[in-house]
Structure formats: C-alpha cells, structure tokens
Amino acid sequence: MVDDPVETLKLFFAIPKEQISRDLIAATEDEQPFILAATQRYLAVPPNKERAPKVVADFWHAQMLRACLMRKNPNIPEGMALYWASYNAHDVADAACDVASAAGQLAKFHRDMDRMETEEGLEEGEYWPLGNGPEEYELLRTESEALVDKITDTMIVHVLRRYGLNDEADLFESHRAAFDAKAEAGRKRMTEES
Image (cartoon, helix red, strand yellow):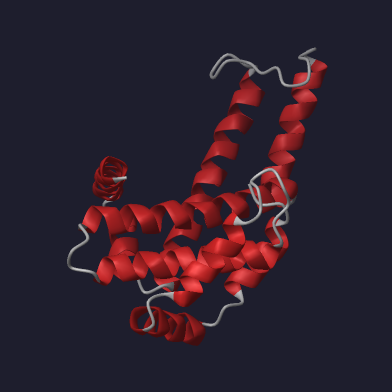
C-alpha cells in the first residue's frame, strides 16, 4: 500500500520517456547505481512507516528499469523478466485503484455498497458472502470489480509500454492466459532460485 498514492503516481508518471531511456542506458553501462540507490532508500524505511512519495516513485522506476535489464539479459529466462515487470506494474496499478476508490465512479460504488451494508444491519468489516447479498448490492459488487479490473489492466499495459516492454504489453492484451502462465512460471523459478 502506498501512503500518498496521488502524489506518488504524479511523480512516477512525470518521469519523461527520455529519462527512462537515459536511466536504462546508464543502468546497463554503470552496474545499476540508480537502481541500487533507489532500492536502498525504499528498503531503509520499515514497511510500517510512511515512505515519501518520491522514494516510492523512484523505487517503482528502479524496479521497472530492473525488469528491462532482466529482459535484455540472455541468461535470465523470459518468464522471470516477465514476472518482475508484471509484479512491479501491478504495484503501480494497485495505487491507481486506491486513488480511484477515493473518487469517481469506483468511490460511488463503494459508498452505495457501504450504505446497503449499514441499512441491512451488517457490522463494520462484515460482508455478505460472494453472491449472497441483495441483488442491487451484487450488481454493484460486479460493476465495482469490473472497474477495478479495467483500471488495473489499463495501468499495467501503460506502465509496460512506458518502459518499452511492448511485447509484454501485447501479450497481456491479446493472450492474457499465456501472459499469466509465463509470469507464474517466472515467479516459481525466482522463488526456487532464492
């Protein structure tokens, strides 16, 4: 979870494409000092403490640069690079969903669902099992989940393309099951090698 997702997303997406290209070249040539420094700044803050938006935005940038470097390395299996890119793009997408949950249509869905829960006497943190709520509630839940999926998918593709991972973005858009299978295989391989 990001403490200030709006500011963090602004900073992350304010990184110009030219800087992404320069940083990738520098990371390739100079043994990744930016990536290491950004990762160290991020990890220096305990997970239960607030991280400054700039620290998180730089960390996301560094992790996407790392995904690009992994993809270019012939010794790293494709699935591992795909998993790394996907995992980190998902972090950005999760922050975008947090922002959307606080404003706009998604926030309205959540307010309406909360109202129905209160009217039906559900306690704080109590929910109907999936598919067992009132019809209007289940419709809102379905629409809310579809909107979250759309935001997530859009952000993942956008982040992948910003970092020149166009083949990965194309696979995500046109063959999602293959994308997910390759990313999962990469995750398992990374776990085994850790």
